Amino acid sequence: MPAPESPETEERELPFSWTVLGFEFALALVAVFLGVTLGPDPRETIPPRTEAGEIGQAIGWGLLAAFPCFALMWLAERLPLQPFRTLQTIVEERVAPLFLDLSLAEVIAIGLAAGVGEELLFRGWFQSSLTGGDSATNLSIASGLIAASLLFGLCHWLTAAYGILATIMGLYLGGLLLWFDNLIVPITAHAFYDVLAILHLQRSHAKKVKQE
Image (cartoon, rainbow, N blue to C red; front, side, top):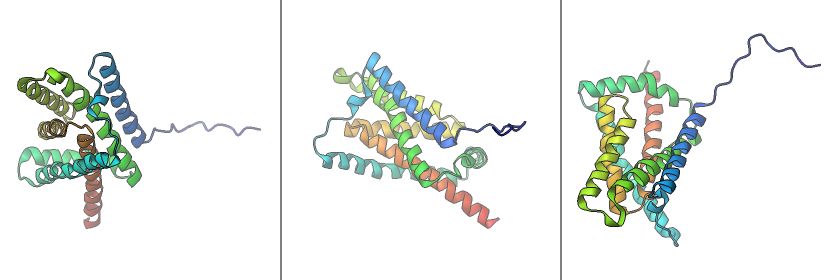
């Protein structure tokens, strides 16, 4: 005989990590779809590699390239400027609580998903579509870099200060693509930065709770 249903059935919420992973995966699909239908295909920004060492080298450069991004975030937290103080308060009150209970595996998965999804869309497709491909000029390259970075900043507009920081990061990641001509480098830098940033949030919150 089936058990009677409770009059108050609690709805199960989708885990936050799943929501983020689904969103970033959707961005990757959108980027590939736009590339296939409108061009250029963002997957073409990842050159075919026959040697594992070359892939490892690109990943290595990406890991190193993440540290300036993290340093920028670390510096923004310590600058005695009101826009950054406001941003810090919003991050502590609204953003950090979303990530506090995530496991290390979830943090790494989210970082990888964000790196792949957002870089395929903003750098792999949008920036590349504006630079002109084989017919690129200095003007079209600069325009594509700036436009993609501004869009990246607008899509991360938590506050004006954060939007500006995200735009700077977009310029940096876009520059990595132009310099290395390999999307693996900005993907790795973006992913590793996100992992470091989330772990930093978790550590800072734990330290603050311990002091209280």
